[in-house]
Length: 96
Image 1 (cartoon, rainbow, N blue to C red):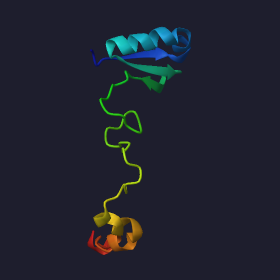
Image 2 (cartoon, one colour):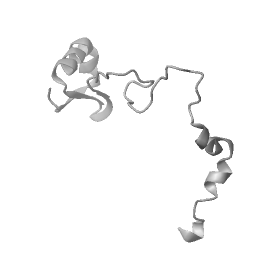
Image 3 (cartoon, rainbow, N blue to C red):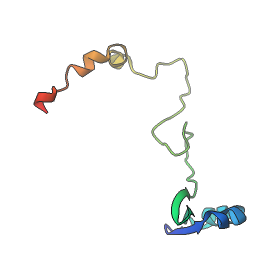
């Protein structure tokens, strides 16, 4: 699959949208849609992930199997319950 980029005016994209989507999927080519010569949108091929993610493009966020288990480990709870404690370790503006 290629990694090239193609540009197309919005009116042409509107008229050929379904065909263009099939082409992006088949070739892997990025498609930039323009209005009055300025980019307004990009159509990129979807990337299949072996694991489900909350946001399709993020591999860092996962849906857990046990929703009753805390998302933050107990040793890190101070960060959530007392944010001032975390901020006290930062240098003051004078030290930066």
